[in-house]
Amino acid sequence: MKTTTSRNPFEHTANIKEEFTKLSEHLREDVDKVDDPKAKALFEVSAEVIDGLQKAFKDLKKRMNPPGKARYCFNLKTLVIPGVFYIRILVA
Image (cartoon, rainbow, N blue to C red):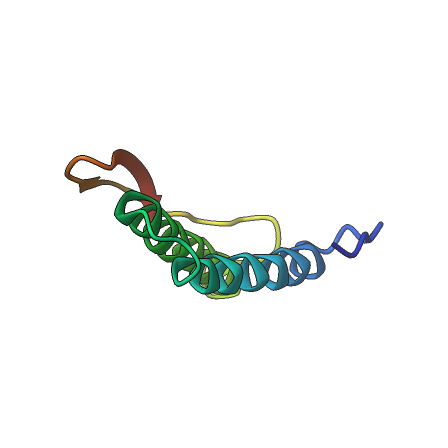
């Protein structure tokens, strides 16, 4: 990950979005490399969660009012894959 000393949040979010993309792609590639159905489901869902986070970072500019006054509106969603895992995530 690139490091920056900038105080501009958009430079930091750009770096994080890049890492999210790499991680999501890696997870999707690994789905075909494992045989265990639970591992496949975990990788697929993890990639979807990472994609959701990436979208939230991408939409940051749209959500910001004048500089320094950001508004965030999140809902708590429950994601359940029977027999695999249960996760609660915040979605924008």
